[in-house]
Every structure is written in structure tokens, then in C-alpha cells.
Length: 640
Ligand SMILES: Cc1ncc(C[n+]2csc(CCOP(=O)(O)OP(=O)(O)O)c2C)c(N)n1
Ligand SMILES: [Mg+2]
Image (cartoon, rainbow, N blue to C red):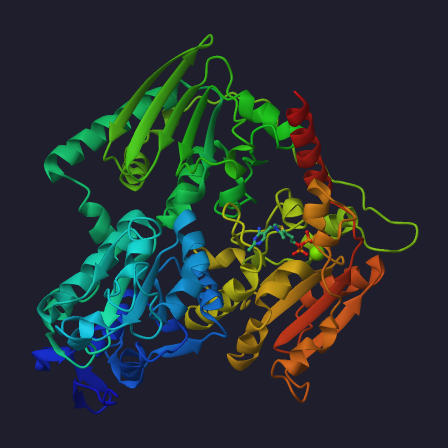
């Protein structure tokens, strides 16, 4: 067991790193994480990571105030949930989050969560506690079948196991940077390297830490020479020769501006990677200054402030609102920032451009210019060009007087009539229409994969709302522990997602709202207990439609494979930790009028409990119109 100690010199309230030549490696890892802004870490203990977890209880140096500070451990009910929570922490803060698991049993449980982070470019550092090098390097013990290992396939009683079997499963598959630490003199450098790579690729990275390493000493040099590591540090490494890059980049910016000055109906499409690379503020500035028409994609919804007067809507190829398609296809230039091309984000690859449109795609590693002229197209790709650098340069160099836009009037925001169902019941259509009324500027909406997710696409959000959903990887149950991670992050960094406070109500504390299907919830529901333990302030809507409605829309509406067990949802929070019922409030809502009243009450701040849980009753085979349309399109496509 590791000693519980701080290796830093203590002077009253502050700790001075400079006074120490060396610190334990366990301390180094957490001090480095703190220097990135990672104040809470997620995971589950196991005997291979306990020596590392012991260092969580050290005192650390705050990167801002230099005062004594601590790190928070957020223990999950299982590693999959913790992986989802770490994902949520990073989605909200855009910082690197940390997940700690143990050898084999823990890290394998986390794989689905980390895969989702990899698929959707989330910055997670996964630290796995692995057997001590005293064992793996010993001539005798290295042949042992240690607990948590899968023995070798071939005669395991005689043949040694592969201690790196789990590392081999994930390396270069769901990790952008993977290090098995084996030499303590290089361990600190490897921590810093994996951090740089996570920023560079905006994807998870792995460190396999032998259980004897946390107690060993490493130099403080890295922490002193480089007190923090930022995404800018990582992206600057992209330039092969900075002078060349700068002039090259200025040249490209000039070319883009030349095309933009000629354009009469340009459009900006802001896609997912803009947010991941921290370009949200820049893109909104670009839109506000140029007054250019702008669109989001399903995976970037809420990146653009939708209250800007030139926001058109969510473009998703043929699966978009008809007016949005019309405006998009009338664009003679499309500036597509942070492209993430996949089935979900392109309306099943149905993006379509006008016959003479110029398409400029700006990504973290390339710039692509495609010119269409009467059906013919030419294409140029420039590598190693980062869109953030170009965007910054565009904002510096643009001459607004040269813009010459001639748009048709914008007519997408048609106010819909309120849907009243004669029996007073709630339908997906009436829910989709009523739900946005609960939001205030700055609120955070987390939604799971399921039928209701389809309605959210056409909501018009208030200023600086943040929408979090795993829209591409689509692992159900993800949103609930993800919302825990978001809630923890909001405690660590209130208002982190807000870049212009003036647009929020005065002294407003943004709310965290989670939408969860009953089927999805049954996958990861235990994490409600961690929400209670960590005092997360949250409003949870549980859509009770008696099973897997979205799957019923696709196939087998009455099949038993789409059924789930009926639960008593409103007693869950008592079982999961709110034993006296003082912290939470649970209700079942069956009518539209009760729903509307609750949405209003919560909007106005009438929630004096930590968790408000609303079980909302919906029809088993009732689908939002957007889901119905997608299914119809798919069926038509299949018949062709
Ligand atoms: C981990 C995982 N398992 C299975 C699926 C397949 N799947 C997608 S949606 C869904 C049903 C979701 O049901 P529910 O959460 O109740 O939402 P509803 O559509 O009923 O509102 C299933 C099983 C998946 N996406 N992820
Ligand atoms: Mg359901």
C-alpha cells in the first residue's frame, strides 16, 4: 500500500513545486492533471490501481492560485458508467478528463465507453493499473497466470500469458496514444506525451501504470519547465516549419477571402470538430461579424448561437426541414468547418450542393477546396492546415466592406400551432413542441439515444445553450452517467460553456436537464445513486413508453424483443440513496397540461430539490415525425 503523503514543501497554505527536485510518480500524474484543469477523476478501484489512487489524497498546488488544493474522486458503480461520466466531463469542459480502472476486468468494462469517446473525438485519459514490473520482469513470475488475465490459448499450464493482452486489444484502435510504462525515468515524459497527443487528435489516450510505479520518484522538471500543457501547444507541433506554415496559411486565407468576396449567397456549416478543438467562440465571432448564413449538423447542434439572425437551421442532407434544404442548396459557397463525415451527420450521405457551388472544408489537419461548375468538379487538398489557425487569420484579415451578399429572405422559423390531443394525453409530437419552452439561455441539455432525440434536431435553442448527445456512436444508456460527468464538471466549472454572460438572465445558474428513454435508463441506472452522493443538481425526464420504441419504428413493433420489464420509476431515487426523500422529488406525468405546467415551474426555478425526476407516460408505438420520416425514407430506399 502506498504511503499517504504530500511530497511538496508546505508553507502555510501554499505548496511550492520549485522547492522539490523530485516527487512521487503518483503525485506527478495528479498534479499534471490539475495543471490541465482536471479537478475530478472518475473510475472504480482495483488492487492494481490502489497504489495510484492513494495519491489522490495528497495536497496539490492549484494551477491558478498556487494554493493548496485537492482532487475529487468520483467513484462509479461500474467502469462503463465511469467511462461515460469521464466523457461527459470532457464534453462540457472541453478539457482532458480522466478515467482510472484496473487491469482486465475494469478496463475491459470501460471499452464501450472509451470507444464512444474515440468515435466522437472526446478527450479522455484512461489510466489502467497493471501488474508491478517486479512481477512482469521477474524471470519466474512473468510466467504466472495472474488474476484478471486471460491465459494464453495454447496450453496455458505450460505457456506464459501475455501480460499486455489488453493493451494489444486497444492500441491504435480506440486510443490515439498508448504507453505501457516500464522505465520510471521516462514515465513523466510519457504522461506529457499522451496529453499532447490527446489534444492533437482530440481522442482518448491510454497509460498502463504498473502498480509499483506510483511510489517511485520522478523529477519535477517537467512541471516546472512547462506548468501546464494546452491544446495550442499540441497544435503548434503540427507545423513542420513555422515560418513556412505562417506564410502558407496567410496565402490560403487570402484565397478563401477572394472566393468569399465574390460570393453572393455563402453559407457556413459549423460541424462537430469545431467544438472539440475549442473553436466555438471564433466561429460565432466570424458569423456575427460577417452576417453570413449559418447551419449546424446533427453532431454540432448548439455550437452556433441559434439566436443569431442568420441562423438557418440544422442541415442533414435530405433528412432536413424542406426550407433548410432550399436555403442550403441556394448557396454558391459553402464554408464547412470541422467536418465529421458519417452516416448520421450527412443524412445518410445525402448532402447536396447547387450546380455551381464552391465547397471549402476546413478541418484540424487539412483544407479541401471543391469547385463545381455545371456538374463537373475539381478538387484541391492542402495538408497540415489547421482550421483554427485559418479562422483566426480570416478574422484578422477580412475586409467586411468587400462582402456582397444577396440572400433571399429567410423563412424557416414558422411558428407552429400548439398541438392539443383531444384526450389530453402526451404524444411525441406534442412533447416535441412543448419541451423547448422549459429552456433558459445557457441551459444544458443531455439526451440519450432514442425516439425523442429526433425531435431535438428542430428545436431552436436559446443563446449559449449546450446540447450533449452521443449522436453518432449511439450507445444507449450513455447519457445518464454522462450527465453525472457534466454535473460534476458544472460544479468544478460553473459557466464554463458561457462565453457571453450578458445574454443570460442576471445571476442565472444554468440548469442541467437530462432526457432518457426507459430502455436506455435500464442499462446504466445505478449511476443515479452517484448523482445523489455527489449532490448533482439535475432535472431528469424519463420517457416511459414501455420499451424500445425507436426499434419498434424500425422493425418488430409488437415483438417481445422490443419489450422491457415495467419498473416503479418514481421510487428509484429512494432506493438509490435518497433514503429519507429529502433530496429528490419524483412524479409521474400523464397529461399534456401537467407536463406544460411542470416545464414552466422548472423554467422559473421552482425546484428546491437536488434532483427532479419526471416519469412521462408516452405511447408504445408513438414516434416523433422526424423519426417517422427517416424510417419512411429508409424503407423507400430499401425498395429501390
Ligand atoms: C448499448 C446499445 N445496445 C443496443 C442498442 C440498440 N438500440 C438503439 S435504440 C434502442 C432502444 C432505446 O429505447 P429507449 O431508451 O426506451 O428509447 P425510446 O425510443 O423507447 O424512447 C436500442 C435497444 C444501442 N444503440 N446501444
Ligand atoms: Mg422506451
